[in-house]
Length: 158
Image (cartoon, rainbow, N blue to C red; front, side):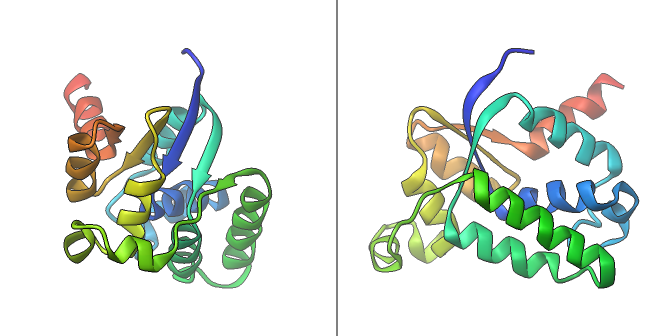
């Protein structure tokens, strides 16, 4: 497996990645990740291991922190610790919300996804399971992987 450079991960997949690190068994039982399997988590973790650097936006960090609130007790505490540890080493791309709201895609995609659109560069690969975001990034020439496509390819290989 060759090592790539930079990945920008969306909030839903970052949530899956963190919850899987907390407890793989929680993945299919947590309301925020119940549509994923343990195999999905493992595939995502393997996929992300190819990259040297992770980029997020403040919007992704906020959404992920909120989504992790579906956990409780020690699971929530550990998930928030994992997120905090990541925040210390990941790069954070900040785009002012007013700038985001001026983009034509804003009314369709919202603040978080348009901030991703504006933060992604030609050197960045975005990984998402959001089809609308995937299409918008593709149209802009950004390298983007739709996690749903990876899941489907795995299913076809079985």
